Amino acid sequence: MAELSRDVIRRISEKHLKENNGLLLGQCLTAVGWVGHTIPELTENDGLVELSMADVAGGGIAVGAALAGRRPIYVVRYQGFQWFNATMVLNYAAKSKEMWNIPCPLFIRSIAMDSSGRKGRAIGPVAANSHHGIYHRMPGVLIAAPMTPKEYQEVWDYFLAHNDPLYCSEHRRGWELDYEIEDILLPEADITLFPTSSTRLNVLDALESLTKAGIKCNVINVLWIKPFSLNNKDEKISIALKNSKYGGILIDGDHINGVAKNIAYDLMHQHYKNDSRKIYALALDERTGGFSPHLDNLPPTPKKIYDKVKEIVGVK
Amino acid sequence: MRAENYGIVKGASGMFTKEETLELFTKMCAIRYFEEEVKKSYDAGLMYMPVYLSLGQEAIAAALSVALKNKKPSIFAQHRAHGTYIAFGGDLKKLVDELLHRETGCAGGMGGSASIHSPEIRMMGHDGLMGTQVPIGVGYSFAKNYKSQNKDYSLIIMGDASAEEDYVLGALGYAAHKKLPIIFVCEDNNLSILTEVKVRRNWKMTDVAKSFGMQSAELADDPWSIMYNVKRVMQSLPAFLNIHTTRAVWHAGTGQDAPPEWDRFSLIKEEIERIGFVQEVKEIEEKTKEEMQKLWEMQLAVK
Image (tube, rainbow over all chains, first blue to last red; front, side):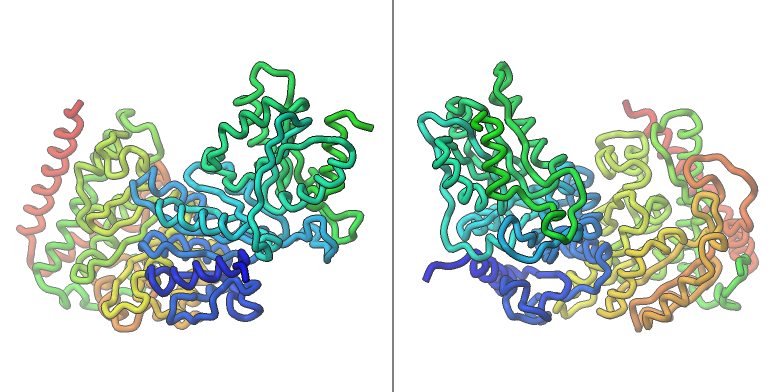
């Protein structure tokens, strides 16, 4: 039976504690479901450390453990908590190497759990969606959004081989995957889609409708949000955008005025500098979400992606 | 209640050796006269950043460094840390260079006055946000002591304002829960810039520490009393010392609004002279002052 992403996370974590002298820190790790069974069922004696409910302090404690050389995995069960947890990661760990030449590597597992277009409970205004935009503005921190088993392994291996803080923007939908998601590169396309995180799954769903409507889409899956170059897809992107009649769309699961527009801006300047084509941004709307389905503010659904592509391509 | 003799241990100066007392005074002189040179250079327009001077507060760092000499703690201090750096043996040339924006500075010119560090004395840098050194220091201590046979001590220093930060309180609680070998010291100069403690809160940090199950003490910055209390609490850490002190100049910069409530440096000199080391006090002070002047002259001459 193929390994699910959650199995990879659990295996990585267990090995880190048992063989790498690592630590794993977080709140409520052991009480309910072991964070969707991504946490190995170990104890503090093994390096699995329950923090108190003091969120801001907890982030600082994780940073201190990183400073002491333990390469901690810091689990934050809802990305929205990053408003509290991120403080010392961003203002200390991300700066430590540049300020004092002292690395402060910690692996922040930050979990988004919005229903992302699927049927399920709405999450509304609190805590649920990706918040990697908070980290994106700061130098000194890497950001990845792995969804598949191999992607988690790649991101983890990169962390171990380097000494920077790494924000692993997870989504619960990714935990269930036991397959890889391939890019799609057509000889001639109408548009190129650049989805991140759970929107990658929504793009796959949207492709069915788009194909039926006669719209041809390239898909370049974004694993590394920062630095974008770690995707190692420069040539592929160049070909894809060259062959896309109407440009591209960066699709993200965080609010629109952040990662989505930043990356779209960079791509446009890199590939469409003297071109009338554009790279658009599609993400959460610029408003607060509510709990009622008609008020919620979720990552772009398959329908929203479909509608946006149709709008750009000009198909009625 | 703030007073120069609040909480001090009667006869404490007699509990320590001549060597300890003179070492303590030497360090106080080093801090004082180094900071006086910083003041001169700052007033001459050589520094393009805020400077946070330890003038008036020398006794705390000096006392801690003598009391903790054999423990070699990791040190997490705050923006006003020149005194700590000097007392624990940080490289003085590198500190001068840091304040003069040079790459040869202790933080490569990046840290300025507020974010100095010295790996040689296990002093970690501060990121500039008040009180963050507390949870970071707690995390460091936890990681260093996790399943370790030997205790790795930490000294975490904060101001009276940052002691109120919510994340500081959360970190204190966690340190107590994990029984970490940390001495928390609040350098309580009674001011957050110019806002006094009594305006900001009606509760005491020592009571908060006690409620977390920590040993605590509140006292004025008599160095012998500080050393006495450090030795007392060492057997049962973590512990919290709230030490009243006085800032001689502004929060940032070199100005002065009014004389400080007390002048600990002069009080200590008087006490050391009283116990019979008049000549030693004179020699130490003159020698150290000259050393600091020469150090600064030499570093300023470097192009």
